[in-house]
Length: 210
Ligand code: PRP
Ligand code: URA
Image (cartoon, rainbow, N blue to C red; front, side, top):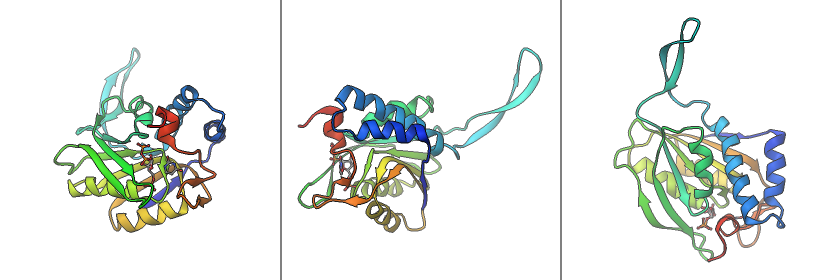
């Protein structure tokens, strides 16, 4: 598994506001979307393209367009939904699948409560988005859904990650072709398996505590 940790002052600046407990939900939502767009630049570095010939007002030239089949974006509900628009802005032809997962805060095991994915993912480039990679259980389970449907090329994008989450992912991914893009690698987990320093509960800060 290839791990890319974005290193850019604009990302660090936006992350600092995102982490701040005083940041209200409307600003938090905007920042999650903006951070996704910035991370998408890294995450789509190997997006498949094919060459096309076009006519400019001056001359004929060759360029590229996104290849078919279109890439698939999979936000992990709830919190991943906050990243979706930021990704779709850069990949407007992408299709979107959904996975709903909730980490049991006692056992830390992810429970899947919704799934809407294409049956066959062979040959599809898949982008899974979730702001938080904590123990890694949720992302590892999400990626397993994609492998089970034949996905061979998966990029996961998280705003914050931990060393524990990365090692869970390495074990889950094995020899599959997976890239993990992080906005920052945090110190680790606290006694409740929250990311430290982190930003708290991403879903609650986006959508309220339910
Ligand atoms: C959060 C987050 C990840 C998961 C990370 O979701 O968005 O999906 O926890 O934790 P893990 O790496 O230890 O599995 P949560 O389960 O709180 O659901 P929510 O998005 O509905 O708030
Ligand atoms: N889920 C979150 O939303 N935040 C954490 O720090 C860990 C899991």
